Length: 377
Image 1 (cartoon, helix red, strand yellow):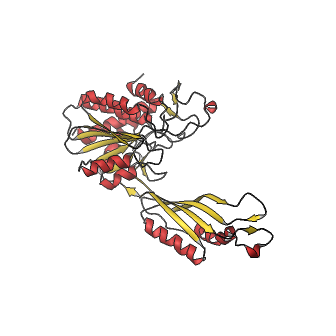
Image 2 (cartoon, helix red, strand yellow):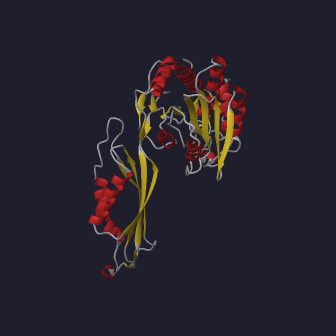
Image 3 (cartoon, rainbow, N blue to C red):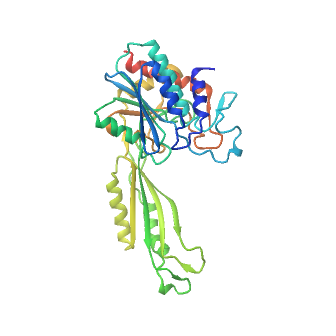
């Protein structure tokens, strides 16, 4: 068994459900210290974070990731216990195998080999690891980045180990992400008896035309990096539970995944204009969880990762901005080049989450060759 697989199992066997780290970061820190890394444990609220760095010179290359995992769901539904890291043939089962403890194990093994092969490498290598990615993401990467920015500690490259691959390892890397803007819309009416609608004001009826218009809007057509902006309703709640009562309000939750064709302000203005046009009595609370970002295809980081993949896999990954948000949204505003490259994403957050053992060994090789491309020459 390779060191990558042993490390992955050791991390996966810890039930670090968000925001709990439960010692995963101590394993990482203890592994990196003999390699020459200085490690800071940065705790904000209930969240554990580490910033580990070897060297002080530029350029600084950062491996970023998270040790927290989502809940398992019913453990009885799993083929193997979710924190067993059981290997069956070429597949390792467990919560966090794909998202994303295995990537961290690949980081570690690749770094150890690189430091041994290139003890006098240029620049610096660093790790930014949090236990708050799967949760609210308020006290994790965003706080570490704020700490680094406050002391003017910069890095040039960042590889996030999120599961980016779709059909085969390294077929896709994320070189950007869409923005995420959520809204909680409360439309007010007047509660009353269902038999006397003239004495009430039904907010569900009132909101229907506006909702139809919001759903039909073509917000933009996307661009060369991003698909069109998407508007989706996630929840509608109204009524008292009784069949003979007109509700006094209805609450609608929705989300925009938006491209660089829009700003949060432009989307907000458009939504308010539609609601005002329909003369609704409403309140609307907004939450921006991330701005869109893009790392140019001609940057050194993407060239290095694609070359590394070609060396190991025999093909270069395509570039994509599809999918959800990641902690890359907190790192990109620093000016760093940010990409995401990790294992297959088909089973993330699912029962029987799993990853290919052979893929992890190849992913370690890709990470190693990326370091060679950027810091060995």
